[in-house]
Image 1 (cartoon, rainbow, N blue to C red):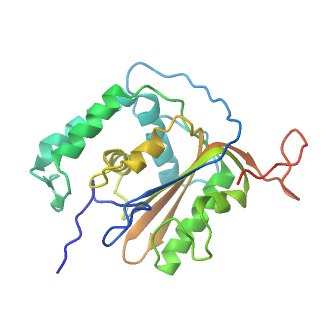
Image 2: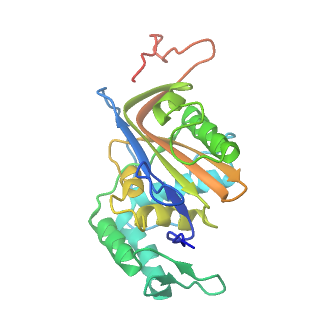
Length: 259
């Protein structure tokens, strides 16, 4: 019987490169459109989290995952310390957290060391701003994956991330999506898993998190009977929410499609 390796830490990731049981992959599409600027105050030492404004369309766990990604983006060198802490739990390619089942990774410490080196060399980036429309697009795919039994970025209706985001507004520059199956028990473990990208040499999930052209995001959690909790994260260079009654930008001009 073929054994499916457990990706760090106890999550299965989704990418356009189809392999074995679940497709480890990310999604990215670029459009030639003007970008938007984003600014943030970035501290010198690592804090426990980067807080988001309270919004009624995100659950506490969804907010925590976005906050954790923003912590990694704004303080990458300090964030490397969290990965350093996991090294002591590795024996070859096995991850042995106290009181938890042994997890078999693909690359073992090699992937951890590579991720730490990446973080230490990475320049700080502004935090991602969350939009309701981006999160609704993520929810569409999370719900679809939960009910259809499919995997990947293509919806059962044939939609791709750019189409789903386009239902709720207009995106700028580029658009991407990360999907996590069998999400980890904490926001930090989920984000560390995306950054390590164990068994996925292109490191597409990490690239999405640290893509300097991405300024906005959306997130949604879902459930799937055979995989437990799944998480869909959308990224874009910018986003204008579709207003009630039609796609109209805040300046009163029609919001042009970017795809």
